[in-house]
Image (cartoon, rainbow, N blue to C red; front, side, top):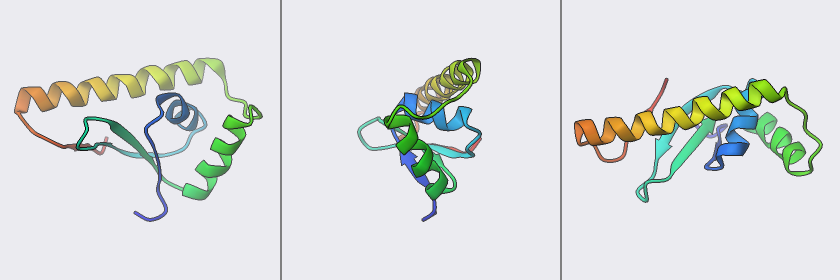
Length: 93
């Protein structure tokens, strides 16, 4: 998907998720790092620019919930990898 925005930064991904950006999937690379893949690259880039300029606002509870939810997704993927013996895996939920 060419119009996708990718980040491995959990806080940045949490901000995007709390900003109601659509999480397309979670991907693990060959080094065991997880990438969060969001739709609408242009809108995500604008939000991320605001985030890094400290101009963005998001509800604190939504951010905390998003952070916890995305972190849980990473650990769920890791557990699945070890339980089923798979290498690189994607999660589309």
